[in-house]
Structure formats: structure tokens, C-alpha cells
Image (cartoon, rainbow, N blue to C red; front, side, top):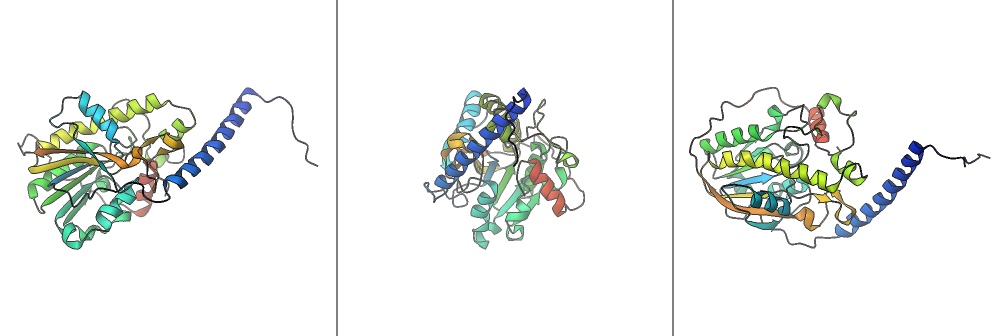
Amino acid sequence: MLEVFRGPMSSDLAAAARSLRHAGFDAVREFVSRTYYGLGSHSDPDDVLGADWDLLVVLDACRADVFADVVGDGDYSFGVGGTATSPASSSTEWLDSVFGRASDDDLAEVTYVTGNPYSSRTIDTDRLGACEEVWQYAWDDDRGTIPPRPLTDAAIRAGRRAETERLVVHYMQPHFPTVFDGGDDGIALDDWGDQPMSVWEQLRFGRRTVEDVWADYERNLEAVLEDVELLLSNVDAETAVLTADHGNAFGEHHIYGHPSGVDLPALREVPWCETTASDDHTHDPGDPGGGEATDEETVDDRLESLGYKV
């Protein structure tokens, strides 16, 4: 018979055991929460494509309350605005709900400029009037994401070409990894597999505090809003809307990040800020980047560096 060790544990081993117990309990609680809050939609989503706008700026994973705090405390050309109920709690769900289920006529009037790699997996980009997948050529390995400026430049070029009536610009921030100076949670593609646990895992297991992660989240939003301001002064739009595909959970009901199929205010309530845009030609976006087409393995790597399981 296998004898059970009952001697004293080292401090490291005891700490590891406590972490495992905590992880197990937390996983059960999260499973229960996801099951309960995924048993059907408790919220009626707002119609994104059916709304009145010429320019739609999508801030990936931006909570409405964080947007309100950052914009309310800042000096921006737009105000806090209101809120909307997203049709999704993840990017793939949002892309499918907004683009995948739309009519060909509606999509023919849309140019989609995106930094989200899920565009290649979730939607038929041929149905759109035009589509530029900026992440294909402007990915930043050092940061493990795509920074705002290549999206802004691509959107300005698209806006000035005016090939369609409507323009959607999908930034990756405030979604982690961070892009501001001093952020250290980015992952180079070649280093995938050796990286530390994600921000949400660190938060879940007590390696970081909510206050610390929240502060980085706000700084990441501030970084992208600088480029949003640049965009709004270099394209023409009678009605421009700033919104998000979904939010982020910071442990509400034991849920972290933005899993699919969850109906929580932290995930479904997003900003809906209406403003205007005018092309004052204060910025020259230059020529687009080039580069080879991105293969499937690289797409997987880029999604993983954003914290997605593929």
C-alpha cells in the first residue's frame, strides 16, 4: 500500500498546495457563474449596424465605467456619452453578431479596419465593402499586440478614400497587453510558451491586485484615446460613435477577463459616445505597410499573445 506522507511541508510546498486548493475552488465558482449567467440572455442587445453613425470606433474590451472615468477626468474633444448593451461578451461573438448575421446590402456599405486577428476566423471579409486587416502587417512582437497608430493611419487612409458610406475602426486597446511605456506584459511570438501567466490569471491567483490591474487598464485606454483624437481630426464623419465590442470582468461573480457566452454588466455594458469628426489634415498617415500574408500558425500565435486559447 502506498504510504501517505504526513511530515512537515516546506514553506514553498505549503504555499503551492494552498494555491492549488484556491485555484480548484475558484475554478468551480467560475464554472457555476458562467453556467448561470450563460443560461440565456438577460439583456436585450442594442443594434450596432442599425444605429445612426458614419464612423464607428471600437475599443476592444472597454468597460463603460472605465471609459467614463478616464474620459471624465481627461481633456478630450468628446464627452463621456451614454452606454449600450453589447450583443456579446467576447470579440468572436461580437464579430459574428454584428457582421456575420448582417445582410449583404448592409455590409456592402461598410469598410472595416481592424487590429483584431479574429477577423480572419470569424467573418467573411469578402462580404464587406472593404476590409483592411492591419494586424497582418503591423503586429508588434515586442509588445505582443498591435499598437494604435497603424490602425489610425489605415483608418485615415480609408476615410479619405471614402469607398463606402460607413467606416468601422477596431482598435485592440484597452485590451491587454499594455502598450504604454513601462508595460511589461507583452509577449513576442517566438517566446510563446515561456511567458508568465496572463494578467487575468495573475489577478485570479492573487499575484496582482485589482487596483494595480485596473490602473494599467486605464492607462492602456488613455494610450488608445490619444490616437482616437488624432483620427477624429483627420476623417470626416457627421456622426462618429465610440464604443466597445465587450467589457472585462475583474472577478465579478468569480469571472475574470471576457469569456464567451456570459451576460454580466461588466462584460455587456459598453460605452456609446456620439461625437463628430472633421478632416483637418493635421496628420499624414503615409503609405500602408507591406509584408507577406500571415499564415494560420502566426494567427494562432497572435491570438495567444492576446490571452486567447486557440
